[in-house]
Every structure is written in structure tokens, then in C-alpha cells.
Length: 215
Image 1 (cartoon, rainbow, N blue to C red):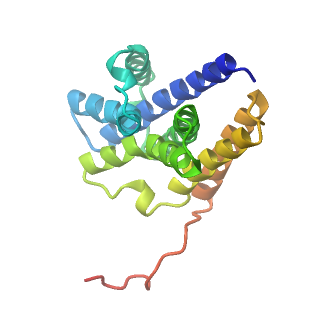
Image 2: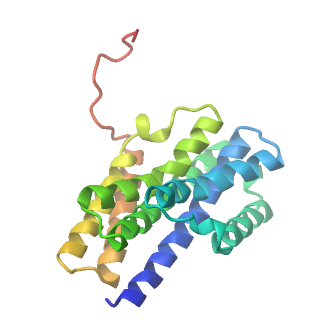
């Protein structure tokens, strides 16, 4: 897969992640009964927060500061969500939509963030870290803004999926296996794992007894 085709594919993953996280932020804002500005802020932070943190770490001006692409995607996504009346759906439907949107954003941004690490010729730790930060950074800021414990600290295979997907891209790159099929495979496997983990309430082991008071 030549470099231009690879970047084109990653642009699609970035667009998918931006739209998906904008939806998840929108749904959180609805659930928290925020006003219009509050919903827009939460959606914006969810969609671009991880990318901004990633870009600062690699020493470049965040892309959103000199390209309108992601801002247009966010605006179009929010208008579509409003036009489709997502805010009028039942709470159970909103929960399912949130999980799907958040899962799509998680996997797409894991790949997009890991690609940045590969462009900067980082080692496996750097590649995985950038994939992880891009995928979960916006969600962490979002959850803190609405006074919730961030998803990655207590809910199923969330952050773990981001790590596995980013590590998978690094491995494929090391073996020179990066191509359309491998990128699609990583995306769909990551999404399937995330949704399966959520459905079966799979979690990583926890230290300490359940219900034990922590001082």
C-alpha cells in the first residue's frame, strides 16, 4: 500500500472517529440535560480532545486549528442528530446508540492516532500511546466535564481495545503488512471486540473485594 493511499485511508478513519465521537458527546449532553451550548461543547471536546492532546505531545499545532474539515464534520453530525430527533428517543435506544457511536470512535481513532506515531517513527510504546490517547482523551475530558468517572477506569474492555488495535497496526507496519485489507481487518476486529465485551459485560480483573470500603 503506497503512502498516499495509506494516508487517504487514515483520513477516512479520522472522519469516522470524529463523527462517531460527536454523536456520543451529543448523547451525553442530552442525557445530562445540558443546554444547546453545553451539548455543543461536550460534543466538540469528545470529538477533538484526544487529537489535540496527541498533537501537542508530538510537538505540532493541532490539525483542527488550521483545517476546517473536522469542525465541518462535527457541525454536520450534530445537525443530522438533531434532524433525526435523537434527543426524542427513549433512554434505552439512546444508550445503545451511545455504545455504538463510542465504539466506532474508539477504534477509528486508535488507528488514526497510531498512524501518527508511525509517521513520527516512534517505537511500539510511542505508537500505542498515541493511539490510546487519541482514542480515549476526548472521552476522558468529556466525562470529567459532566462529573462522571471516565469510562476507561472501570468499564469493560474499553481502553484495552484501543491498546490492542494500535499495537496491531504497529505489528502490521513492522511486518510490512499494512494495506486496505489489514486496516479494515483491524477496524472490524476492534469494533467486534468492543461490542462483544460490552454485551457480555466483560471486565479486567479488579483488585480488592467487591463493595469493600476504600480509605
